[in-house]
Amino acid sequence: MTSGRQMEWKQEELKLAGELIKDHTAVKVGKILNKSKNAVLGVLYREKIKNGYTPSPDSKHSRTHMRTRVKSDPALGEMKCYICSNNFTRASRFDRFCYECKRTGRVV
Image (tube, rainbow, N blue to C red; front, top):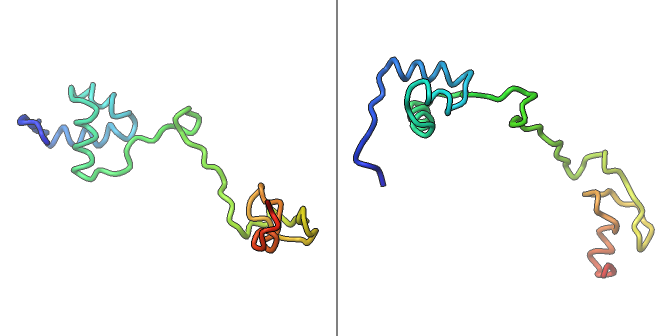
């Protein structure tokens, strides 16, 4: 559902918004252009302007990516099964039993 009123953006405003979004948040760009944050984000999305504002790495809003482990990751290593004492490759840090013991139902 859309409201009956649509805001027109001038070409100069679009160019300025595209330049400003590289260094400022959508809220700051909206205040500079006297538009709402959602209007700024909407027009940038519709005009397909990419690579907007990115917070600095030391900002509390920048996300540090955790390392995801693959099942074949050697960092998990091998371990002895708590039931049969056979060595097995761990798929997660919580693995305590080998596949064979889990499959045969020896694990309660």
